[in-house]
Image (cartoon, rainbow, N blue to C red; front, top):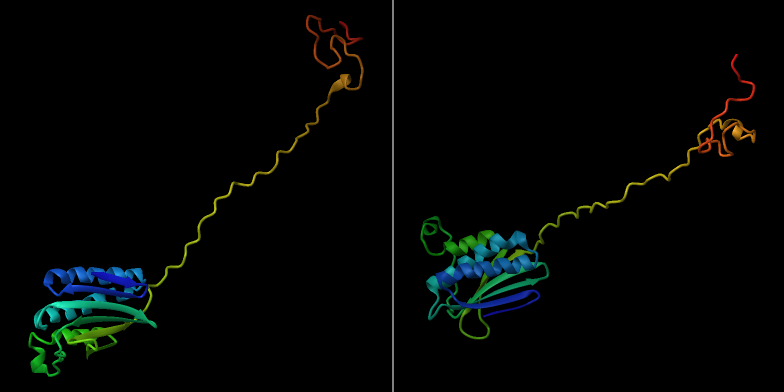
Length: 197
């Protein structure tokens, strides 16, 4: 069963190896939703170690609750089970070679704080770790190119200087109508005074 609010997510499960990978994916998805991508690897590794401890050591059963909470810039991941025995971290070099207790040393190394406490509401304990909540860096927004139509200059009227000749001055030109073009079917006459010579 999964319940969550804006900054709080709770998952109840059996701490079995087949379920641990699923819980890692749930934690990763929740942190992506909260835009805490830089914390995903550490939080997923930490919750894996805590669930593995429940699987190996918790009595009388493997039922547990994973709780993720984001409050005041701090992400806290807790694993709550019904076994009242508090965990112990092995400190000496000889004990570090043992297979038990290394999970909590890893949780201690990857988190800013961790701890264990008895459940106030009944038998059992909660083992937790916390990380400073750092939002994923926001990429600067790329400027959106604005496409504009090229600016066209208005068309300019070009006046050509043309010598219109005598027709523009109102002088009659033989064989040309008033517009300065030969009339249809009329022969073009030679100018006055121009004759064979």
